[in-house]
Length: 149
Image 1 (cartoon, helix red, strand yellow):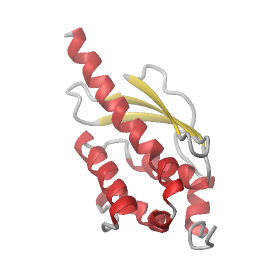
Image 2 (cartoon, rainbow, N blue to C red; image 1 turned 90 degrees about the vertical axis):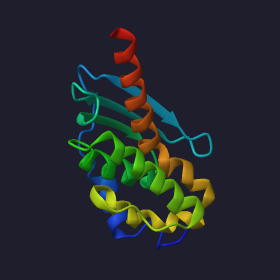
Image 3 (cartoon, rainbow, N blue to C red; image 1 turned 180 degrees about the vertical axis):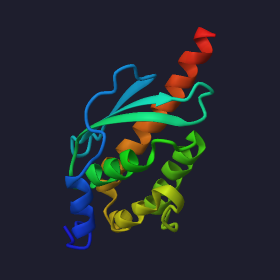
Image 4 (cartoon, helix red, strand yellow; image 1 turned 180 degrees about the horizontal axis):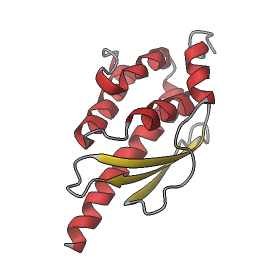
Protein backbone atom coordinates (compact mmCIF):
# COMPACT_ATOMS: atom_id res chain seq x y z
CA UNK A 1 0.00 0.00 0.00
CA UNK A 2 1.08 3.52 -0.70
CA UNK A 3 2.44 5.69 2.10
CA UNK A 4 0.17 8.41 0.65
CA UNK A 5 -2.84 6.24 1.45
CA UNK A 6 -1.94 5.94 5.14
CA UNK A 7 -0.44 9.39 5.70
CA UNK A 8 -0.16 10.96 9.16
CA UNK A 9 -3.56 12.66 9.18
CA UNK A 10 -5.36 9.42 8.28
CA UNK A 11 -3.56 7.64 11.12
CA UNK A 12 -4.31 10.50 13.56
CA UNK A 13 -7.99 10.35 12.68
CA UNK A 14 -8.08 6.56 13.00
CA UNK A 15 -6.52 6.78 16.46
CA UNK A 16 -8.88 9.47 17.79
CA UNK A 17 -12.48 8.51 17.09
CA UNK A 18 -15.05 10.50 19.07
CA UNK A 19 -18.36 9.11 20.36
CA UNK A 20 -17.24 5.46 20.46
CA UNK A 21 -19.67 3.10 22.13
CA UNK A 22 -23.43 2.69 22.14
CA UNK A 23 -26.10 5.38 22.23
CA UNK A 24 -28.79 4.70 24.79
CA UNK A 25 -32.18 5.65 23.39
CA UNK A 26 -30.99 5.75 19.78
CA UNK A 27 -33.68 6.17 17.16
CA UNK A 28 -31.88 3.60 15.00
CA UNK A 29 -28.72 1.51 14.88
CA UNK A 30 -27.19 0.14 11.70
CA UNK A 31 -24.17 -2.09 11.22
CA UNK A 32 -22.38 -2.31 7.90
CA UNK A 33 -19.79 -4.92 6.92
CA UNK A 34 -17.24 -4.94 4.12
CA UNK A 35 -17.20 -8.39 2.58
CA UNK A 36 -13.86 -7.56 0.97
CA UNK A 37 -11.84 -6.96 4.15
CA UNK A 38 -14.15 -7.80 7.05
CA UNK A 39 -14.32 -4.26 8.42
CA UNK A 40 -17.45 -3.57 10.49
CA UNK A 41 -18.91 -0.23 11.60
CA UNK A 42 -22.04 0.27 13.70
CA UNK A 43 -23.66 3.70 13.91
CA UNK A 44 -26.36 4.63 16.45
CA UNK A 45 -28.30 7.81 15.63
CA UNK A 46 -30.71 10.05 17.51
CA UNK A 47 -32.59 12.65 15.49
CA UNK A 48 -34.31 15.87 16.44
CA UNK A 49 -38.06 15.76 16.97
CA UNK A 50 -38.70 16.86 13.39
CA UNK A 51 -36.23 14.28 12.05
CA UNK A 52 -34.19 16.90 10.22
CA UNK A 53 -31.09 17.17 12.43
CA UNK A 54 -28.74 14.65 14.02
CA UNK A 55 -28.85 15.20 17.78
CA UNK A 56 -26.53 12.43 18.94
CA UNK A 57 -24.35 9.65 17.58
CA UNK A 58 -22.33 6.71 18.80
CA UNK A 59 -20.05 4.58 16.66
CA UNK A 60 -18.45 1.19 17.05
CA UNK A 61 -15.78 0.79 14.37
CA UNK A 62 -13.95 -2.50 13.99
CA UNK A 63 -12.34 -1.50 10.76
CA UNK A 64 -9.09 -0.85 8.98
CA UNK A 65 -7.37 2.52 9.41
CA UNK A 66 -9.25 3.94 6.41
CA UNK A 67 -12.62 2.89 7.78
CA UNK A 68 -11.69 4.21 11.21
CA UNK A 69 -10.54 7.54 9.75
CA UNK A 70 -13.83 7.97 7.88
CA UNK A 71 -15.73 7.00 11.04
CA UNK A 72 -13.78 9.60 13.02
CA UNK A 73 -14.68 12.33 10.52
CA UNK A 74 -18.32 11.31 10.59
CA UNK A 75 -18.59 11.12 14.37
CA UNK A 76 -16.69 14.38 14.92
CA UNK A 77 -18.95 16.44 12.67
CA UNK A 78 -22.37 14.77 12.47
CA UNK A 79 -23.89 16.03 15.72
CA UNK A 80 -25.91 19.12 14.88
CA UNK A 81 -25.77 18.41 11.14
CA UNK A 82 -28.90 18.60 9.03
CA UNK A 83 -29.59 15.10 7.75
CA UNK A 84 -29.42 16.45 4.19
CA UNK A 85 -25.72 17.28 4.76
CA UNK A 86 -25.02 13.72 5.91
CA UNK A 87 -26.53 12.33 2.70
CA UNK A 88 -24.66 14.91 0.62
CA UNK A 89 -21.37 13.99 2.33
CA UNK A 90 -21.96 10.29 1.68
CA UNK A 91 -22.70 10.96 -1.98
CA UNK A 92 -19.71 13.29 -2.34
CA UNK A 93 -17.40 10.73 -0.69
CA UNK A 94 -18.65 8.04 -3.05
CA UNK A 95 -18.15 10.33 -6.06
CA UNK A 96 -14.64 11.22 -4.88
CA UNK A 97 -13.70 7.56 -4.54
CA UNK A 98 -15.41 6.13 -7.60
CA UNK A 99 -15.59 8.99 -10.10
CA UNK A 100 -12.59 11.16 -9.25
CA UNK A 101 -14.82 14.02 -8.14
CA UNK A 102 -13.63 16.79 -5.87
CA UNK A 103 -13.60 15.99 -2.13
CA UNK A 104 -16.58 16.92 0.01
CA UNK A 105 -16.67 20.44 1.41
CA UNK A 106 -18.31 21.96 4.45
CA UNK A 107 -18.43 20.25 7.82
CA UNK A 108 -17.17 16.95 6.34
CA UNK A 109 -14.30 18.52 4.38
CA UNK A 110 -11.73 16.39 6.21
CA UNK A 111 -12.83 13.53 3.98
CA UNK A 112 -10.32 15.07 1.56
CA UNK A 113 -7.64 13.22 3.53
CA UNK A 114 -9.06 9.98 2.09
CA UNK A 115 -8.76 11.07 -1.53
CA UNK A 116 -5.88 8.62 -2.12
CA UNK A 117 -8.28 5.72 -1.51
CA UNK A 118 -9.71 6.37 -4.98
CA UNK A 119 -6.72 4.51 -6.47
CA UNK A 120 -7.54 1.37 -4.41
CA UNK A 121 -11.05 0.14 -5.34
CA UNK A 122 -10.94 -2.77 -2.84
CA UNK A 123 -10.69 -0.14 -0.06
CA UNK A 124 -13.72 1.89 -1.17
CA UNK A 125 -16.25 -0.19 0.75
CA UNK A 126 -14.48 0.02 4.11
CA UNK A 127 -14.01 3.77 3.65
CA UNK A 128 -17.74 4.21 2.96
CA UNK A 129 -19.05 2.04 5.84
CA UNK A 130 -19.66 4.75 8.46
CA UNK A 131 -21.43 7.10 6.06
CA UNK A 132 -23.52 4.26 4.59
CA UNK A 133 -24.49 3.12 8.09
CA UNK A 134 -25.34 6.67 9.21
CA UNK A 135 -27.55 7.30 6.19
CA UNK A 136 -29.35 3.99 6.61
CA UNK A 137 -29.83 4.72 10.33
CA UNK A 138 -31.36 8.10 9.48
CA UNK A 139 -33.71 6.47 6.96
CA UNK A 140 -34.65 3.76 9.45
CA UNK A 141 -35.32 6.28 12.21
CA UNK A 142 -37.55 8.30 9.93
CA UNK A 143 -39.43 5.21 8.73
CA UNK A 144 -39.95 4.02 12.32
CA UNK A 145 -41.30 7.43 13.34
CA UNK A 146 -43.66 7.58 10.39
CA UNK A 147 -44.97 4.07 11.18
CA UNK A 148 -45.52 5.01 14.83
CA UNK A 149 -47.42 8.21 13.97
